[in-house]
Length: 79
Image (cartoon, rainbow, N blue to C red; front, top):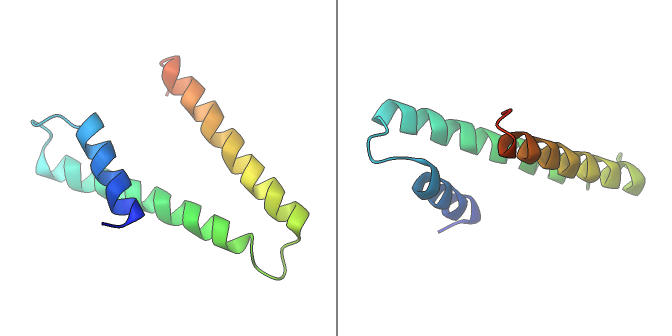
């Protein structure tokens, strides 16, 4: 099983009820993989020749901050 498949299965088991509809399950999986693809593409771009090391680090730090902010909002019931 791949990294993303493993992560999806973990997410699916922890967040979805048995009563979750097939349509909702499909849409949630699509959203999960869209997020994974966006993240992977951003990380891969940081290694491109036209991106400086400082800019790459800035991108990764920005991604880290976005996740921290979102996680805090979820904890506070704001997201």
